[in-house]
Amino acid sequence: MIKKLFDLQIGTFDLLDEHWESDSVSKWISNIVVLFFVGGLLMGLLSYLNILHFGEKFTAFFAIELAFNVLLVFEVLGLIFLIPKSVADSVGKQFEIVSLLLLRDAFKEFGHYLGDMTWEVGFLMELLPIVSDAFGAVLIFLITGLFYRAQKHIRITRTYEEQKGFVSIKKLMSIYLTVSFILLGIYDIFTAYQTHEFIYSIKLFYTLLIFTDVFILLFSLRYTTKYYNLFRYSSFALATIFLRLTLSAPAYYNVLLAVIAGLMVLGVTYIYNKLLVKQVGEAKE
Image 1 (cartoon, rainbow, N blue to C red):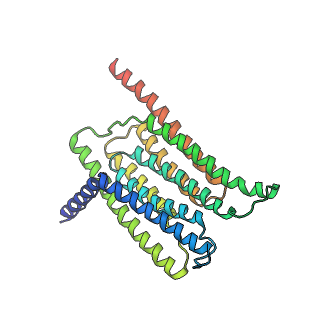
Image 2: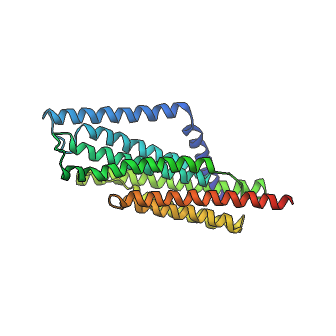
Image 3: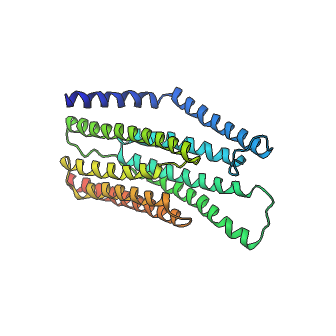
């Protein structure tokens, strides 16, 4: 009975994953993001002309923030679908999301300076957090690109049956993460209706990712106990913790934590690749 339930969940994931990567879904995602962007622009324009009053934060830049938030929802879903395919690629996706979050925050803060600007020392000091987020996003973008290029996807399982079982477990974790993400979204909407303020639960979702990474690490022990693999997986889990701290850290510290996490996984990846090449060379000898 339990096996049939698991098979049904895995089959559901395969069906969703197949459609997720289709061109039609990509077009739908683009259309939805554009729709929210145009809707945000209209709300900002109506608020600016005092035709309708939505609130002080509903400026033209609110449309960019809204579009980024919707895009981030789909990026998180993309992250969930990556977990069964490659833990390393899912970590890279986490850094992509953090870089987009930093860009979103920079756009969000720029929205506060649409009026007349006085280029005084005080104003320049206020711009520093925006510059920090923007420059941090570029650094994370660079680190993520190098991280993807450095990846060598080596299976830790010995047989096809083991690989299938390991992937199946990761698919189950992805399904549970998807359900959790949807429930968090419903909770955010319900809370926004009560408080009239929308607060995203992405911090809680990253906390769930930490436990997911640790679970995958512990489950992988049945396939390999090699120190190099264990250290690599552990560093990925630790990077997720750093990224979780990034989401709640104040200006400057958020960029610092994200860059530290990026340099850590990048360094571990390069060292792992060097040791892997050395191991292969010794095995041939």
